[in-house]
Amino acid sequence: MSENILHVENITMQFGGVVAVNNLSLDVNRGEIVALIGPNGAGKTTAFNVITGVYEPTNGRVDFCGENMIQNYPKGNMAKSYKGENLGLYKNSVSKTPDQITKLGIARTFQNIRLFSGLTVFENVLIAKHMRARQNIFSATFRLNYKEEQRMRREAMELLEIQDMGHLKDDIAGSLPYGIQRRLEIARALATEPQLLLLDEPAAGMNPQETQELTDFILEIKNNYNLSVFMIEHHMDLVMQISNRIYVLDFGSLIAQGLPEEISNNPRVIEAYLGVSDDAEN
Image (tube, rainbow, N blue to C red):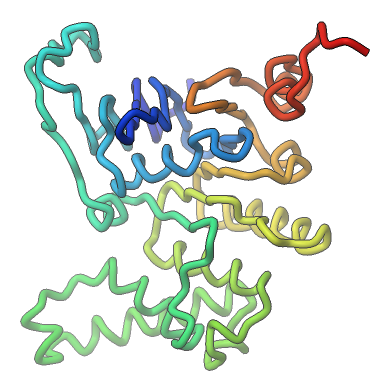
């Protein structure tokens, strides 16, 4: 039986009168590549923002490696239950911050690349390395932990060398070609030493050759770093090529889940993407 690494239970995210994510439940098992797909505006990035602590859900729960990270079952909501618990007793009982979630072992990239564009490639990775620093504020201020700083600098450089970006270490991140910036963003995420990597449309804006190179890169880092990967992606060739399982959202609700071949032949998925139904007139 596969070991569960991420469990999302009954997540709802409401903004005023708009329900962006509606009662979403899903799982990612250790060592899997799982995709979350759906039309634009389906609620995919909102779901990622809940999992990574950017948003506090209106309702629901997120567990990582068996630890409850996020939970909000409003008081009086007696209809919800989790493993026999009376969740009507809880009110915002758990709400970890994004940096706490990163330290637990979840890293993410964004649909719009978020590098420190004015800093070098090396500096971008080194900043991420500081998420795992073992020094405190006092020792960092007075540079009492010189060995710790040297360790992080060495590991940052080793990571760049492994990703074949060592020769770019002094280049300004914002000056790099688009595809290389994507790889750098992923390398920076790897610098936090994650167990689970969340990729938000990593192939956005890439041509077919760049997309294939990215596909190979994701498989390589997944195997080399013993990662589980959860990704949002619109490039169906990439999704179908590397995903173990796929979840499909439409208007915030889960409409399908299964193996790639099951999803590609699912009438509800085809309708959601193409806007047609089986009984449409010819």
